[in-house]
Length: 432
Image 1 (cartoon, helix red, strand yellow):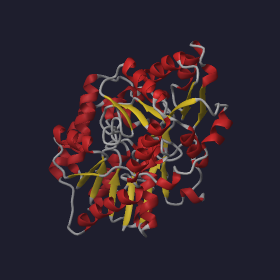
Image 2: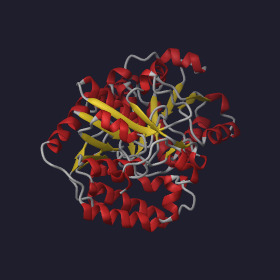
Image 3: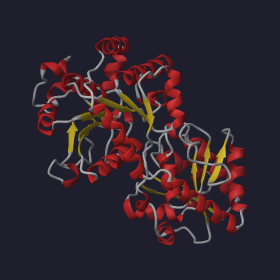
Image 4: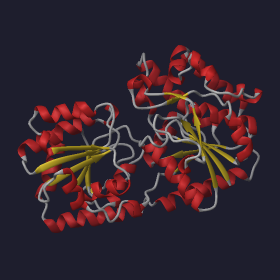
């Protein structure tokens, strides 16, 4: 089948959604399906002639939106229509309810194609990136995402926790639990000693690690505080933070102020072998985000045999089994987190090995192969019956969207420059 995926974030951005879209696309293609990805331009984006970009349509975007490291795509179809005519999609898969998610709606509606929506994100946790953030805007965002889900023919929830939450919020569309799996071979067999040598970390050190986007919504202020306090009492402990983001300098200053700069290691974003080696070097992966919809980075760590210490939250509780493959802490309290780190420190070596073995077994349950096959099986029934977007629900969604007014324009980046972003005009069906 021919699958078109629309996402507001994609490589080279290294967030969870971008990695999810890339991973599913790779697996679909291995099985003989065609995938066209529609995504924003990023400053590091290659040209259409680059091998990695040949099945990607890049949409002009506002770079570094509102001081973040995101690109906000201008949601106009433009020359995309020509690409779609050439590709002839069978199914439209939207990964966001806003921005290019609106384009996905227009494509599905005008071409009478089934629409699938993956609810990757708790969007209300991210409104701080939008000027005039408010509680009212958070409520609107929740309602818009819920109404969008009800326009789709099928909703993918990355975890059981999120599926339950969507039901509670009023999603009536059928919801299937489809996590983003892990390419197990990409995280196994890493050279931990090599990574430690590269970053100047002693072989005998207790190495705590974290990988991900360094942003406020990841609750890194709490995590860094707890880890730093532990390190002050444990001079053999080091902290490896892999990733980049808007609070990178803040974290650096925080550890320097406590005299811990020489035991904090921040190499930036790592990929491929370097990332695999970094995981292998860790004694434990520490995680405090409560804004996730699935524990993708946690399953990656476990695929490398690394136990996880994390706060109990949606998406995390499906992966971390307290006392089995790490620690799952029921409350956000620094003393609890420090206590879990002390527990790990004091574990006899045979018990640490058991944690690692159980982590590897957990990762098997989240293999990318099985997750992709499940998604494809869910696609197929949608192709067997005629599908059209419910006009009454679409009209309700549009009315609700219009209530936001100026804030929606800010979110979508509708500026005077938008008219010059494309060289081709929209078709009448795409303007509706």
